[in-house]
Image 1: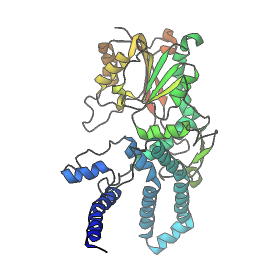
Image 2: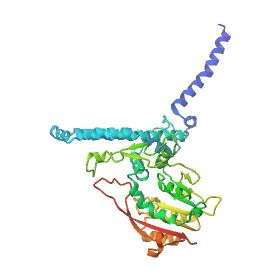
Image 3: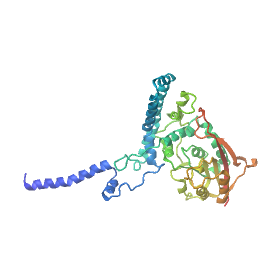
Amino acid sequence: MSVQNHLSSDALLACLIPLALLVLSVKILGNPRDLLGVIFGNAGAKAGPGHFSVQRAAASYAQYARQAKRELAAMRKSYGRMSWAHRRIGYELGYVKKLARLEDSIQLNARVTDAIAHLAHEAFPAEVQQSTLLQPEIVGDISRVRESLKHFVRDWSNEGREERARIFRPILDVLKAASPDERKHMRVLVPGSGLGRLAWEISQLEFNTTANELSYFMNLAFRYLLSENHTQRAQQHVLQPYASWFSHQRTSDALFRTVAFPDVVPRLGPDLALAEQDFLSLRTPSDSAGYDFVVTLFFIDTSLNAIETLEHIHSLLRPGGKWINLGPLLWTGGGQASVELSLEEVLSLAEIVGFSVVGSDENAGAERRRTVECEYTADRQAMMRWLYQAEFWVASKAR
């Protein structure tokens, strides 16, 4: 080979080596923009995903089985620290089998959580990416996942029917006062819609309904039901939603009982749309003067600034539109909420903002203000009951 050929080969090699290193770096580090961040010294400047973001929710569903099994390992380790005599009594009580049943329960629930994580990767490929050296794995929130699993029971199972009926009925009774012909031209907004059952029920009355939810823990779970790829028939999926909490249980069979869902199969359509965003970022529909109804169920106390929330509800309604509310006042504590108001103060605030609240007179009919005793994602067979004295009211946009 001539000297010239040697030089040509060396030159080619010199060009290929940096290219190969670049490809390898991208493979290891992830997104090419992250690599540029390393080169120019601004890597890691980007803030991490928000707590209710699709990234964190997807990671939490994907990590459910791993985190739940880690808890189970700690439980087994704690059991193993007892004396031999006490371990033998535990064995005779069936506690070892109980822990084995918990492991089976985790595997059963993981069928659902893994499918939701897979759906997240399908629906949001740009946002939900594999971890890299520059993008370490997001630590999942298993408590939020468990909360969502219980919402499948509350919103979409036969077991949750009684709880739903108690809190849905007052709201639906007000909406049903509109004639079927009127409903077809009326818009209803449901902020904090969770897994979407109330919004879906309203859409079945032929209102033009928008389900608004910020949390992707809820949004991904609702999408799982809406997806023809994941949910094709009623009672298709099963969970053991109560298995993670051994307290207040009468029997192990009650603890590990299976719940099937959904009782009906929801789908989006002309009367049901999703708005997966912060409620405060919503605007009045461009082709109307505002919503005819804003329905808040267990919602207003989730806001960090109740004054801003009520003002925004007011701004989204058309003149004469109605705000229907049912829920408690369980404010976010620890100084996170700007104001933590009493019921009296909330009703006074509504008047200040420009609402006229219907009173408690019996003549007010379905719109009568009243207290509704109810539960939220309750375990009907448990030894503990958490009862809310929730308040129901209807308020018109008076000015």
